[in-house]
Image (tube, rainbow over all chains, first blue to last red; front, side, top):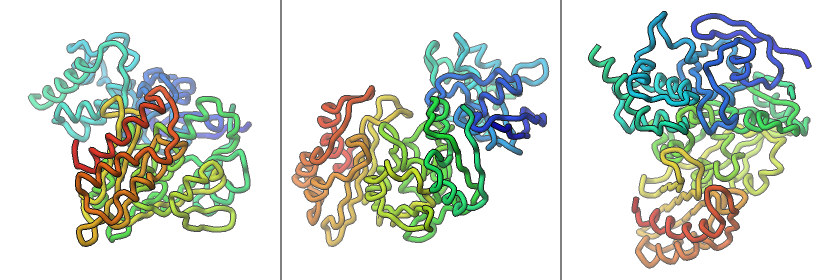
Amino acid sequence: MSKTPLQFRHNGRDVAIFVDGGTNLLVALRELIGDMTPKFGCGQGGCGACSVLIDGEIHLSCLTLAETAAGRSVETLDGMKQGPNLHPLQRAFADNFAAQCGYCTPGMLMAAKALLDRNPQPSRDEVVEAISGNICRCTGYESIINAILAAAGGRASA
Amino acid sequence: MAVTVKTFTSAGEAAGALSSDRSARYLGGGTLVMRALNEGDVSISTVIRANDQALTRIDASGPRVTLGAGVTFARVLAERDLAFLHAPARSIGGPAVRNMGTVGGNLFAQSPFGDFTVALLALDATVAVAGGFGARDVPIEEFLQARDRQAGTLVLSVSCTRPASSEAFRYRKIARIKPKGGAVITLAAHLPVSGGRIAGARIALGSMAPTQIRARAAERALEGRSLDAATIAAAASAATEGTSPSDNALGSAWYRREIVGVHLRRLLSGQE
């Protein structure tokens, strides 16, 4: 089976890879580009661990045919930190004990970023809605919701 | 296993390719086909795509609304003129699934999914499909009854008539997880009123049969009557007639039969 050339922007950097037909974007990111921040959870669209931003919109990379990312901008958690500094959302997750095993955290952070990029001052209900496609099996959701609200509040005072 | 991906610029070409290859599936938003590939579905050897702008068009300005098959639920929610479809669109997935999942794909989603299709069934929608021999319009109920045999046809768009008022169209999804979760059951009611009486009642149910179905006995109980307590009670008690729900992790067939009348009564009474 022949491979298909694919180019897209990955965290602000142009990447070019060859993919097998039917390869999903999660596999392309992890196995071909080496970005291990998006996680494989269910492969069914139920857990949100593989969430990435495509042209600024939250998408599930495991249900995205890699070829459909051609020419688009893909952002993952790997691109979130700002040099040596954590992104305010990452800082807020640490300060609010919003991660335990950490497996859902990349997806949670991308879902939270997708929300705050469009709505910098969300209500609690809007935060709940924004992470409703992301499952956490350890901390429960309260600390995650609080962390996102704290990050939004921090932005407002900054 | 690697599959062959074929991308076309026109829906017509994609439809031709789809109809000539039994192992081909059309890729819309990916929430069904990519999931099947991730699960190792070996019945799919070709994935067909189309970059046709017509598939993502929304025409919502007039009384007749047409949604391209590739319109996502996020776009439905962003369209003020589609307010009557916001409740069903919002009831689907989380934000990522709504950015990906499409109106056309939802027609193929099996229980506990396919909620948007329940709304479209209550609205007597028409499905425009293209096969090997050109395009045609199919009533949504007929489309759903033959859904297992639709693999070779490409859905182009779905259209329906805008309800006369927000009261005339009602939607309710029962899920165990809020705000996101698969449906225990899904209900939609279209209740056009003429001279104080219901004329052309449509009740559609999801997860009460292998496909979304109309509750015809409940519709008959409503037809020609005013929406009073006695009429609502009659419709609710007829809600299970003709249904054949299944057991799954979200609920048993028995439970679904027990609750469908309760939720239909609440939907018709305007209760939360």
